[in-house]
Image 1 (cartoon, rainbow, N blue to C red):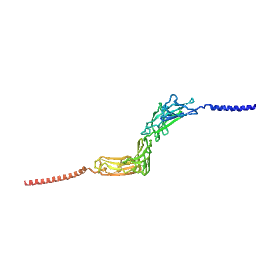
Image 2 (cartoon, rainbow, N blue to C red; image 1 turned 30 degrees about the horizontal axis):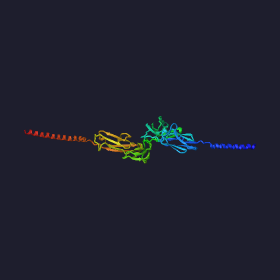
Image 3 (cartoon, helix red, strand yellow; image 1 turned 90 degrees about the vertical axis):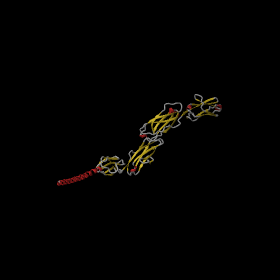
Length: 437
């Protein structure tokens, strides 16, 4: 009895195993369906291929493509045994939809959905060229993003260096690609000089994990020119260095010119103007020219070379010696602006300091006005003098007046002598007549 039960147990287990094996063999395996990509994020103007792939279907399958809510006619379909491909060329905003791939295997349907998200952000922002940016002067700036979709997901940020100046969020949006211009009123400060102005546009669609950023730097001509010293001076024989910096993009090219020469001479082709062993000929006006592809700007500065003054000039307003009674002017001048001038005769001073010319007007000059006149140039480093000797000629009519009285005295004596002789002769004649009578 025990053996019979044991044999039944073995047979029962074996029978159960065969039943399970047969059920597995005879059971129909459910097929698998895969649609890729399931969540494509695609740029307007590009092509998209969706692939619908069937696994474990023993017979030929039937494929059908459609939009979720209506029939879809916007692509080219290529079916193979277990694969169907849908190619959509030149994606537009109208393809921002869900596409369904439906498969029938042995009468049993199954479908998968691909959720297409379309965007457009084809190029960097565009900024027009700016002629110049000058510190503390307000100017309107504009930045345009072209052919963007969806516009309401765009943010435009204005920056100067790393500092945010203004943030713009477009409000109106349509179901197609759009262009948008952000206009910004900007007043640059001195602290902003040398930093790029940029427009940064960001398209962000958080629900699909899309965030794209494009930026452009503004091109602008030189506006504010900064010179390290506004009143540079150097002593004779010493060294002077002046720096000229200009704000602009592209970075401006700097040229230093020496004016007061014909033609003007280039003295430096970079930011620094260097004067070694300073001489008087290096004094004068210099010009810093800053230029780039957008524009140009310039600024002048006067270099003073310090030392004893140049020898001044002294001259008379007329040629030759003046005549008594004439009006004359004596001019004392210097080409050295750092020297004070004094014009004087002997100890009598005339004129003023820190002038490039001193005039002495003498109306109706007299002989006593003649003599040596001194033009003196003086500064902190020394004194230089020039002199002129003026001789005043007497008037010719004064000489004649001195001669005429003498001539008149001689004539009167002669007449008196003749009259005396005449009277004596007449008296003798009368005496003779009396005697005869």
